Length: 230
Image (cartoon, rainbow, N blue to C red; front, top):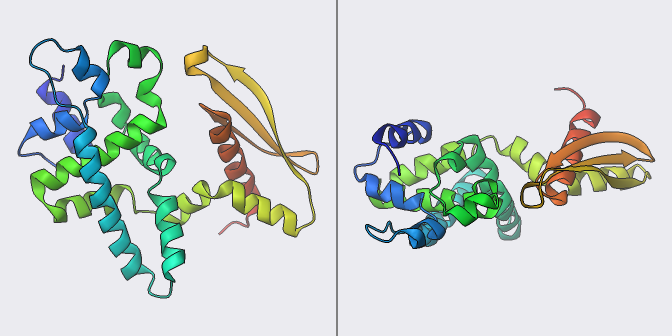
């Protein structure tokens, strides 16, 4: 269970002080935790996640509409999808160390739920929903722009790294391959290391909790090395 100072610490991280901390606690409560409680059950975050998803879509749509007046509807849709997809939201949530504050049931905790992208991305949306209910659209808008829609160029390069690297290598007439170098840890909490090679030469290495994430990290490192310094 939370102590008040722990919730205050999270409020400081996200830059928003709740009038009703019950909403914040609900946004951080996984169904596995609430299902284990015999009395004084906490509500879980699922309804807040539903609301937060809608608020995020509205705010991000307006942001891209106003920021990129030259973009077509299709281009804005693709950009929005890449910036607010599950891996993107999980990436932003990790920057806030949001996983440290989630209330999980014992089984979910034991199987690595605290670091699972699907859970922390859902909690990120639930926090948005909670901020919207507590402080209105302007507060939710500010949170989304500060923690999700910021530094878009770097984030887009990261999220699209495999596609960008593939296109770059094909344009130069080279071959690209990903090789699993190692797997460490128990089955429920593995860390994968992947190396990407270009024409058989090592070009980047990445780690992740699944092969796809490790490949993305490796591609991103390869892109950073291949791109000219600014």
